[in-house]
Amino acid sequence: MSELSKFLDLILGTGGGGSQPAYESASEAEARRQARVDAGIEEIENVFGQFDQDFYDKSQDAYLDYYEPQLEDKYKKGLSDLKFALARGGRFGSSTEVDRKAKAAQDLGFQKQELASGAIKAADDSEKAVNAAKKEMMNLNQLNANPDLAASLSNQQAAILNQPPKFDPLLDVFGNITEGLAKREEIENRRKIRDQINLWEQGGGSGKIVR
Image 1 (cartoon, rainbow, N blue to C red):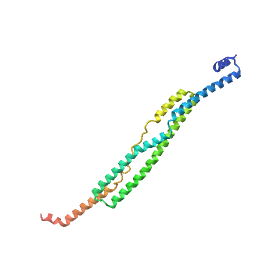
Image 2: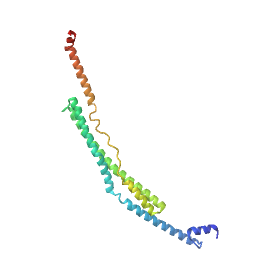
Image 3: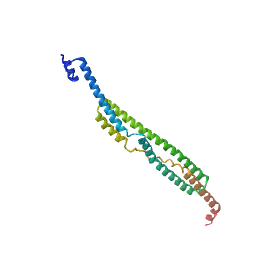
Image 4: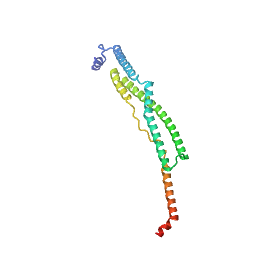
């Protein structure tokens, strides 16, 4: 028996060196490996079973819970800023007030629709992240055929996926509600001052000369 044959017998455990026992041994080894892969799949499925529709719905709710209060606060602040801007310009009850409030209400409705779309996207992104992590675990399990490792890595991924989502603060979408009012007020004030100067020059200028 050649040294190569002895080496193959040692690896494959044939003992007799025949081709048929070697084939059966390899088949048995593959069967045992597949059994470990199947056990790993079961571990992965058990861990990822927690990510159901209820989990994705919670992702959607978390998005809305974060952004809706901010939107309402910024809307109220925008109306408050508008109130003071109108008061400075003496425009309460004017068409400017009506138009600005109507535009703000329209913007609020649009922003609420945007939040609803964002919430749906947040849930979709969460589901994609779960599916990607699960697929990665399945690939690693197929490669390693180690159910204990599959369970450990899957639990690590699940812990990451269960972390609270992080969102960026909402932009000040109502910051332009008073846009242009201050400028018009300044122009109006300049006009009033100019008119007062003209009246003084026309009516009171001679008094200065007498003195």
